[in-house]
Amino acid sequence: MRKTIADSENSKVRYLTRRMAAVAVLALAATTMIGVTSASAAPLTNTTWSVSNNQAGATGVTYTFELTTATAGTISSVTATVPTDTAGTVGAGTVYGLGAGTASLTGTTLTFEVGSPAAVSAGVPLYIEFTGLTNTATIGSYTSTVTTMDNAATPVQIDTATSPSVDIAGTSTAVTVQVPKSLTFTNDTPSFTLQMDPSLTALSDITKAVTVTVKTNAGQGYTLAAKDTGLVTGAPIHTIPAASTGVATGVADASFAANTFGFSAALTVTGGSLAAVDGAGLSNAGDYVGYTSAGETLVAATNPTGNTADSLLLTNRLKIDYNTAAGTYTDSITYTATPLY
Image (tube, rainbow, N blue to C red):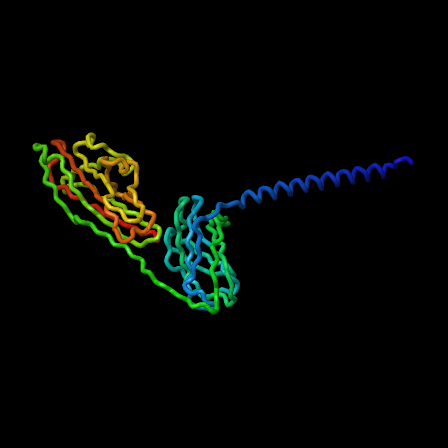
């Protein structure tokens, strides 16, 4: 049978239709692959969920979430799933690792919105309390999916993980043990005066030891930082500069320059905190570094101290010659111990 013109045109239409359908399938497959890639996230570590009262239907309950970041990013919010029919007027309790913010409950999702989105490094422990909750009335064992979100116009998850389970029970005896957060700090030298004289060797290079201690039950340890205002006189103004630009750069004992002020640091006693001096300049025993006006961390610990306080010996050193102008120089050194609960 001979093909007519109409048969030929119909064949072309069917071919083009199949061709366009194949292109559409390929485009859809490409879009799907891109979507899978953009949704990937790293798992949070040390993720836990605890409740202050695990009885079904209990009111005024505080839900506490602890987590450690796996990916560096700017966190705008943290979300956590909770059981169906969890209710309450939710508030933000104690928060560590992020700035102040607000808490809310929508459906089965708790959200902590950071007031000022915070740039957080990987490996940083976070602690968030949601107050005023009413437990689900359904007895059972529940986990929570905890997620950190970035600060994009449409926030995207940074890290996520599922917590161990929490039992909501109607026949259990709810036991709450409150261990207060505690940190004790001491400084054995509230002030000191150095009488210097550039004409005498013994009075032109002087050291002064200061010992500070920290004892805390903070579960994630603590940091100890120091800053100073700088040695300066009244009018006419003269200054004595720092021995180095901070804890990253150390100066050997024999290379300590005249007309500079610095310090060395050594942990003489440690409890169970796993404390260590921070910064390359301080980690080389005997080296001196300079204080900074902004402040820098001198010691970082990762565990509670236990009953034995950590003790840090700071050896302040000032060396002058006739290039240091005469006058009374004053300075204020401020130490800050920050617990990491």
